[in-house]
Each structure stands twice: as structure tokens, then as C-alpha cells.
Length: 238
Image (tube, rainbow, N blue to C red):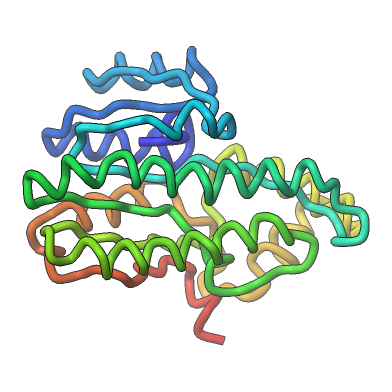
């Protein structure tokens, strides 16, 4: 469970632990990961997933991988810091590839596994000023589908969950960034920017995303692979 110290990651970790899973809470925030792990009876893995050389020879003996870690940066393309762009793609696309690669051999050997990629409505749609995030999520969608095709004969499924704006620290920071870029108040950003295209005018809660992840881990979802669970409040229906 990457990005497990807070937000969606912590909610998914708690939900899977309640269902009986032994959860490894991976996060760059060592103290936060340890706190969640202690609360759920799991274990913490303090790791910087943007440090790719440390992941290239990794081997994971796990049944479920949840790729969730992410960051955001809001800026016009012509002003976007190239180093920041590279960091976001390393963390949100290359690291999921390496973690999935590390986990598949043991999953194949057991004939069962679940790859769950926390994508976004931005894996299906684009928004201005989010070139790196949108690029990473679109890439994650493609990776998830390729894994689904390769892994099906081994009893392993690969799917994306695509939430809209979730009530997390990442979104709270986005509100301030969007207010700056759009020259709006933070209250107006929520109604006029973040939820503008959503039919349901509220943020989705992390626990709702966690429920979708729990379903994908269940036997009821054994035939579901290479696709999306879209929890965007009707955004992509437009």
C-alpha cells in the first residue's frame, strides 16, 4: 500500500486490514506510515518511491499491490519546472511499474493476485495547469491495461480506481494552488473549478475509495480486469 500514511492510502490500508489482510504501509513519511501500521496491526515501510534505482532489483512476495502514492503541482506548461515534471512521472508511473514488476512473479506462482492502481478522473480527462499529473495518470491507465492482458492467465487482475476530488491533504493543497493560478478565493475554487464538472457537488471521502479497493480484492471481482471503477460524481459523463 503506497502513500499509506494519510488520505486515500490510510483509508485503504484500514479497510483491507479490517478484511483480514496483513498490510505493509509504504510512505516517505516514516512516522505517518508507522502510526497507521500500528493502528491496523500491519508493518511500516519508509521508502522514497521516486528513488528508482532502489526499486529496480526489488522482489515482493505479496498478494495485493495498491499503487497510490502521488503528488501534485499546478503550473502552466510553459512555466512548469522540468525537474518537478520528472519527479511526478517517476513517483506516479515508473514506481508503480517497478512495484508491479517486483510483485508479479510471486503472484504468478500462487495463481492469484490483485494490482490496484489509484488513478483519477484525470486518468480519463485533462485539466489545465496539471500537465505532469495528467500525463502520469494517463500512463498509469495504459500500464494497468497491459498488466491485465499479460497477467490474466495467471489469475492476476489489474484495474484502476478513478476518483474525482477526494477530501485529502493533497486536494487541500490544490485548493490553495488553484486559487493562486486562477486568481480566485479558496471557496470559489471548490465550487467553480474543482467541482465545476461534477454532477454531485461534494468531495468524495477516502473511505468510499477504500470500499472500491476492497471490492476489487474480493472474489466477486475475479472477472474484472483491465478496466476502471469510476467514482467521479458524474464528471466524465459530460
